[in-house]
Each structure stands twice: as C-alpha cells, then as structure tokens.
Length: 178
Image 1 (cartoon, rainbow, N blue to C red):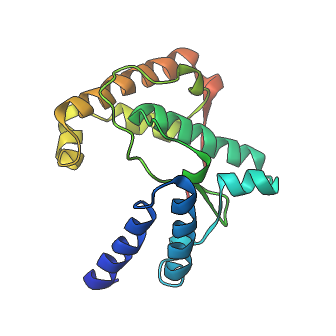
Image 2: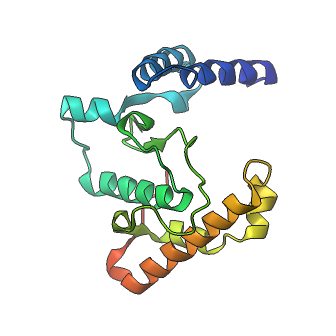
Image 3: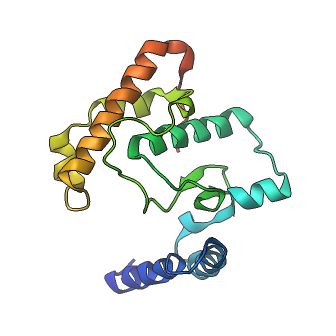
C-alpha cells in the first residue's frame, strides 16, 4: 500500500469514530469496511459481536472462541478498558476476535477494573506481559501514553501476573497462532 492510499484508508476508518453515537458509528464502519475490503483483506470482518448475538450464531470451535474471549478479558484488564461493548468486538471469517476502539482505556489505576474477568490466560500472553517494563513501554508507546498511564499498565500487569501465577496451570491454555 502506498503512503497516499494508507493515508486515505486511515481517513475512511477515522470517519467511523467521528459519529455521534454507537449505531451511527457501526453503520459508518460497515460502509468503510465494505469499501476497503478488496484492498485490505484483514477487514474481511464477518460481523461484530452484537450481530453474532442477534443472529444467535455459535462459533464452530467453542474452545477456540472461549480462548479468544479470555484473551480479550485479560487485555481489557491490562489496559483498563472502560468501553468494551458488543460493537467493538469484530469477528473475522476464521472466528478470530479483533478488538477495536480503545479510546477509553489506559487509565491511571494500578488495580484491575474487574478481577472476576481474569478467569483463564494464554501462556504466550502471560509470558509477554512478564516482559513489560516501564522502560520498554515508554520506548515503544511513550509518545501515546503518559508516564502515569504506563505505570498504571505496569501495576495492572503485576496484579494479572500474580493472579494467574497463584491459580497455576489449571487456568492456563495455549491459543493457536493466527
């Protein structure tokens, strides 16, 4: 993709987030995705979680789907996402979950928002979280987060790692690579 077409794609996508309410954003997102889908295969979203529930569709592999959900729950606790909703959980044709809209995340709190959401964890995700440091976070995403937001992530990471370490192997799984 050229720089010009990448900039155009970003502008199209931004229009979905400039809407006044969730319904308008969802409609705009679908229009944008339909326009970009031929150029950007990763936008081959089958539906969002609201559509899935409305259609009463079930994932072909319930174990894999549950693992996708567990990963989302851990990630949302790590970044202290305040706005996870059915419209910002996109499902592709392989039933992978794509989390969008993290505009109300990265709060300063050092405790997780909802400890009960920490039910199971992917081993690879936990291993990656253990490697997070303030220094490597500031180096990679410091332009986007304040020092206190980074410290919040590290504090929540510590809670998550401690939680799953205490619970042991019974709550761990290995999610297949995408």
